[in-house]
Image (cartoon, rainbow, N blue to C red; front, side, top):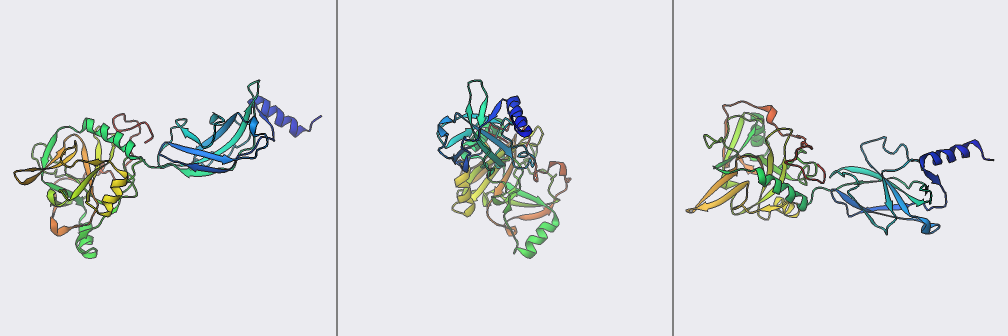
Length: 350
């Protein structure tokens, strides 16, 4: 005879197609390595007892923000991944749509498949936490290639500009010796972008109106505008990098570019993480020389957001009030990328 609890446990195991057998080794000392934005390697240690009976591993992966995700770690509950027992470390890729820069929890149990299709399983391991990585240069190059398709023809421009409230420029004069200071980029754009929350810089625009060739008079960021001649920020002594490509549930798309003075901390940051563009020949922003004069062009069919990585003194340009409207609906501050857009998403997460 068996006690009630033993019978209940056995019945539960039979119902779920998973049997219990205590002698299978329990994974411990789990290690996560080789983390990318959409894959990782996992390994663990286990006792040699009954090790040769293991045919499969059960792996349970959950986003950390789901606080109830680990509530049902019972041995008789099927898990999200059943993998054949392969030599460790084992690469986990493609079984889930892993998102970049996202915290996950993972737990493992060993299993032995029986002739009737049932599994004998071990206890669950401890729960380990880890975070996926940002997009690599390979992923950013995929985004870059998608952006190139819709960039459109190039229009001539002569100034970069930055819109803010009057109080911003007053503060710069009073507290920063007249120099605008780089600040950490917000989390707008692609979730896996390596510049979000990390790169320090100053946002500029360079878009022009088709009919006038001048900056538009409307802005989502404030009624005061700092204008600076393009050659003072973008010239042969700077490098140009591709940073991101995204949209915000709208028909128009944004491309983020980074301009960094050669050898500056910003340049070193970008060199390791972002695809570098040829300043004279690319689909988004160019600086070429004609008759000894630097000439500038920007892409017509995307909205360029240009990040300059060094401080910029207000004396290098002019500050004036614009005559147009403040269109707050066009602001991209902490804007979330549309994950369903086929134009600006790649297959490794959003």
